[in-house]
Image (tube, rainbow, N blue to C red; front, top):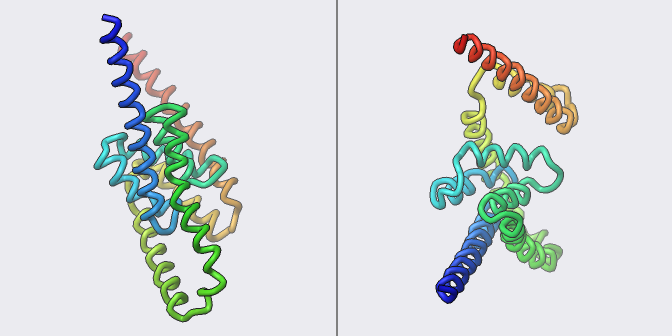
Length: 205
C-alpha cells in the first residue's frame, strides 16, 4: 500500500513538472512569434490558451489583460504570469513569466550586437516599415475584438467613448483614465448589486 502511494506521488510530481513545462513552452511560443507585444499578443494568446489548450475562457483572458494593463510592469509578462498562476499557482506563474521573457531576451541580445551594423541598410529600413504596418493592423484588430467582447451595455459604451476622448483629444495621462474607469466600474457594480438584492428581497416577500 505504501509503495502504491509513493508511485502515485511520483506520477503526480511528473504530471506537475509536465504541466510547468507546457506552460513555459506555450508562453515562449507566444513571446517568440508575436510582433508588437502587449495588446498585439491577445489574438495569439486567445488561440493558444482559450481555443487550443482550453485553459480559460475568453472573458477570463480579457480580465487578465485588463488587470495586466492596470498594474505596473509589461502587460505581456503580467498576463503570462496570471495564466501560469491560474494553472499551477506561484510556480506556474514563474514558469509563465520565464517562458514569455526567454525569446525576447535572446533576440534582443542578438539584435543589440548587430543593430549598429545593419540599421543603415535600405533593406532593413524597408523591413522595419513593413513590420510597423503589420503591428498597426494587429493592434486595430485587437482593439475591435476587445471592444466587441467588453462593451455589453450603455455604461461601458460611455466609458469607452469618454476614455477615447480623454486620451486622444484632451491628452490626459493614461493612469488617470484607468483609475477613473476602475472607480466607475466599482460604483456601477455596487449599485447593480444593491438593486438585485432589493429585487430578490421583494420576490422572497
